[in-house]
Image (tube, rainbow, N blue to C red; front, top):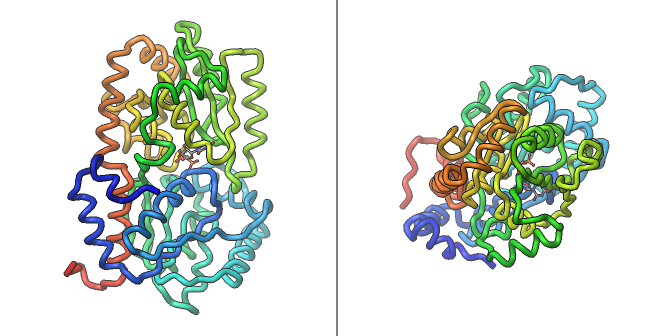
Length: 407
Ligand code: UDP
């Protein structure tokens, strides 16, 4: 098991000591995380790393998942898309069903936390219980709220405002609310199977297994098969670039259990890619962290051509691995990439294709982007910083005054 002390060589001793110091203030408090899926996607990824580390800091952190079926997740996927600004209609019956599932969960699951830490919109209405049971409630939003559909925003807002505080990933996502808002970027864990160092041999073994030729350039996008990740646009950009430079394309991803659209998107992607032996569509089962790590490390260029994005952890992961990344300037990606310094920001298929060609050819420049990206992630987006931000947020809930004395 990974120990907090293992982070010392990466972030320095002082930071780890500070974590213990702050953690002491929360001893005895139960932090109950609640979300809607235990595997797939960025939220599950972060929680699976965060919860054990909080426990090592002697905070009683736990993680529960709401119970819901496909009908609910079809609705919440629509809510998710509408919050990302996609034009679509959500009926009153659908909203009623959304509330019914939340209500059933609120009544059937144990809400035992001193701090109830609810992640994303799916379980947001659990907070209706707050009047009855009290406790401190935080709503953590991991998605891009910069341009939500008004109607759905108003619907959610009435539940969000029941919380003691809301946490957003980037300044652009913050909305007008009657409760305090806190900005906390997500993070990656440098010691997880997905991000730890790998040997050349380990990396090679994965490419061999998938029959991908490492002697030719490889461009890769790791993402759930989701329209908003624009895998079809990735294929178009690759095809354009390929007119000028030899390359192979890897599209790797699985689906999250709370995302019912995955299969449809995957079928479209397969059709678009058919007949090209240089396109590799890899359907990864949950827990393919080692494979994702190796694919990212062994690729020449990493893409994240999302149309909308929450924070974009795949970008963080790739930058940590010193990879040149070409990504859309959406969601939290511009917080991670400064154009032409720590990666490349694009907005079009043509622009993406242009930069694929450039980065495959200008290897020194690509290397420099990757190194700068790594430094930026090290300073801002590692799990140790994230732990600290969460703990300070928890502490602040128990202090009405602005000043907290850590004695
Ligand atoms: N991921 C994964 N398996 C997949 C696809 C993605 O483990 O098949 C991981 C990916 O490495 C990253 C996270 O899921 O850690 C995705 O987070 P991101 O913020 O990029 O997007 P989200 O899926 O949350 O929209």
